[in-house]
Length: 291
Image (tube, rainbow, N blue to C red):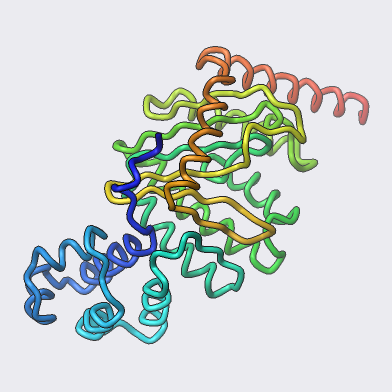
C-alpha cells in the first residue's frame, strides 16, 4: 500500500501551499505578519502552506497581492489553483510544463520517500548529466526543450540526492544497463554513478530481470510527502500526474511485482559491476580494432 486514501491530498493543492511558503520566505514576511495582513489566524495560513487545508483561488489571490508577486508568478500560482482535485494532471504546453515542473520541485523538496520503477531506462533522478542530455536529445523531449529539460532535472536531483531524510527505492530493469545512445564512455560513467548510489544507506537499488522491450509495469515515479502521494509518468513527450487512490493502488501492485522479482542488494551491485566491466571491455576492443 503506497498510502491510505484518506491521507492523499491533491498534489497541486500541496504544491500551491509550498509555493506560497517559498514566496513568503523570499520576501522575509513572517507567518504571523502574513496572517494579520490577510485577516486570518496563523494556524490557518500554516495549514494552507502545508496543504493540510486547500486554499481557494480568492484566498490565493489575496496572499499573492499582499506578497507583491509579479504577473508571471501570479499567473503560475493561479494556474495551479485551477481544478485542484482533477484525477490527473497532464501538461502538454510549454507553459503548463513549466508550472508542473515548479510544482514538482516544490513537492520533491519535502519528499519523505521516492520509489522509481524503471524497467528499460535509468530513471531521471539517477541520471548523470551526460546521459540525461543524450536521452533528451534522442527524443525524450522536443529538441528546443532539451537544454531546459536537463537543467530542470539537475535542479531536482540536487535537493533529493543531497537530503539525509528521504528514502529512495529503485527497481531498475536489467535492460536499463544497456547504453541508450552510442556514447558508451558516457554510459560507463553512468553505471559507475549507479554503483556509488547503491552504496548510499538510504538508497535501495535493486535490479529486476527484464529484457529490452519487456517490463514489469510502466516506468513511473511515486513520491510521498507528509501530506500527499502522487505518481508521475511520461506520455508522448508529456508528463502525467496521478493521485487518486485507484491509480496509486494499481501502481502499488506493479511495484509489488517488481519487488518480488528483484535481485538482492548484493546481486544487484554485482550485476551493475558486471555490466560496467563488459562495457569497458567492449570499448577497449573497439579501440584496439580501430588502432
